[in-house]
Length: 212
Length: 122
Image 1 (cartoon, helix red, strand yellow):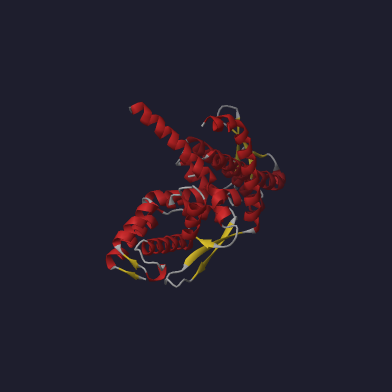
Image 2 (cartoon, one colour; image 1 turned 60 degrees about the horizontal axis):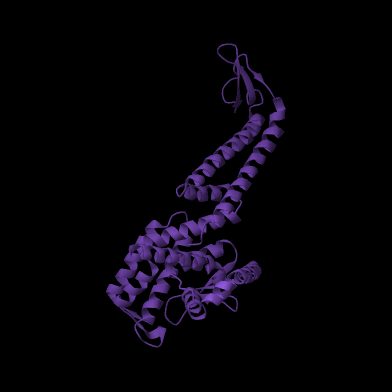
């Protein structure tokens, strides 16, 4: 298969624009996507040069232009890849990082996505804080935990403390050592619950989408 | 004149949505009897069905099917000089394809009953 220099340039320009827009995928995936599309463009262009055997067809700029036109704009194509793959990954993976990435993408597309993202961030944050306090208690037994402190005008406020610094005057550690199992279990449970709910919402959203 | 154009455009849009909805099953079906690479899948779809498939939708969809675990892929060298990415159904993919086919069959037979009088009227 011979390719004219000009044709090669057009292919590279197209794939360059595509690569620039592909985000949320790792390097290996991006390389595979680009390689697959390059292969497709070359096969298609060669086939259209009216030679019976693809393997010896010549790739001309005309063939390449037609192949690129059939693929559509690289920006649109990249957008399609990201939506499809990220949403699919959120469904199968239970990793909060993966799910959050997909939610960020969804949030940029709709208000519902934004709300689910917000809710998930809150759920994850609370869960992580609870787990952190449980762990901190092991290192700062005297100062970490769920504390209740006297506020300004006679009322009280509660706060989770990681225990850096000294114990606040007049305050009381509410749960003592119980914060360790409670924080860990509750925090872990909250993380898992947030994951399940986020996945559930993503699934519901995918079903309501008409396939692109 | 303009009103008729608008109505026709709306009809076309429904058809586009309908074709898109079938694409996932169509791709799984195209892979049923063996592994194929992207362009082969496109040609098979064009040859065996009335689906007019835009290439810009098939490749991302293949990527999604892979992320869902329904297909797997492998790179194979070709005489053309560049490697091609072949796709094949996984066990899960085969089961899912059968499930979707059953749903499709049920759906289309339900519609057929409803549409029978309209078909006679044609």
